[in-house]
Image 1 (cartoon, rainbow over the protein chains, first blue to last red):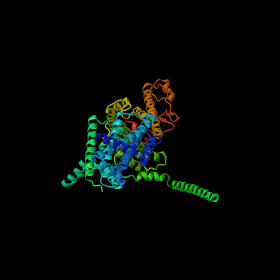
Image 2: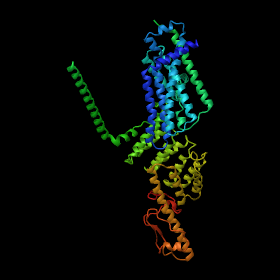
Image 3: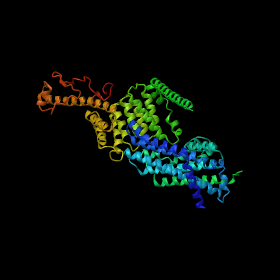
Image 4: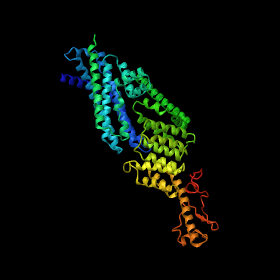
Length: 255
Length: 309
């Protein structure tokens, strides 16, 4: 079984490498990271802050764009091209197909993120900005966020078209960053409103948990316990979404 | 065949020409529009910034970058140096937004408050900004330090200045992150002899060590010169007093004081003028500044307009 998942994921990775969109986004990300050198000349005072901030934000936003726009096509493209029939007619369980697809995109994202991180490290080195452990903690959490978003895109990809998947996933991304506010609003409402908003707060992914960009630029460390808990949160949320996607995909009838 | 080739070539040429012409036109139009907006538009952008509390959730976790970009814009506008007095209201607004987006943006509090107090003369807004930064940044000595500076030089309240300085000195850590040793010394001296111009000069030197922006440094240097005149005048006055006690009469000239040994050396007037003595009344003045700085005289501790540049 594992061999099948691995072969599907490697195949997905190879397929993703043919996507022109991927390279466009990657080039933009590297340009943004590089542009921080120019911008830092315009600012006064803390120029380290601007370089780190712009670098981390670029890796994050372009990672999210890649996760969404490549992720939404994972299953729907197979259905559109009718290639799905050749796969599901083989003795491959549907969940294995999904997991393989998911891991393939995660490998793609990993490769992209590594390229962007190398770009950032080069800029930091050239501009004499100290490279700290905290920076890597933040980068690792950005990657966990990308994994969660990819899983969200995969769930939508199993039952709707690419365009709708993109819109839904973007919506979840926005809600995920506002979920803390949902709770605050809820606290000002009556019991029913508070109950609904608090339920939404716990069900929706809290993507702000993976945001350590402010910690890096203001040198506020995150304890190992907190980091571990955040990793566990991201991992369990991702697994939950993969199970959900498998359930939906299992029931789908391909005519 | 040849005719067709020629035709397609000329068509190609026309397309290229048209493209270049259109490019020139857009650049010219853009230039024209740019000329019309200029400085006003940059100010407009900052004035129209939504409140930080509204902007923060809209930035979806990229609010620190938002703060950086607003700070960049503030600097660009300040760099133009044609900032009117009323325009400092938007400066405060923009700084308020930037520091709401990132409550730990110490440099924005610090430099922003210094500009508001020193260049805009809006010490009220400057203190408001700094007070806002105190709570989220208990590890920063710069915020209480600048608050102390404002209270001492702009509000003439040396006791509150001393309180803030003591707060800055209590921040744990060693320089450059922690407070330099002179902060604790200043706090003690402010409590003991807040009206002594020597303390003011030490304060200004401390501030100058921490300030790297030329426009703010100029202002601080000017202030330091002015306080130096007051310090010198007070030193000479004390010497005159000692001379009278010793000789029972007013000195004839300032040189008399040095010859008599009551003044170790004649201070140099920092503006290039000279110190003068009225031998009849014993009054000492500077040739460049007729007004005295009352804030440093124990008889009148109130800061008045004109005392401080």
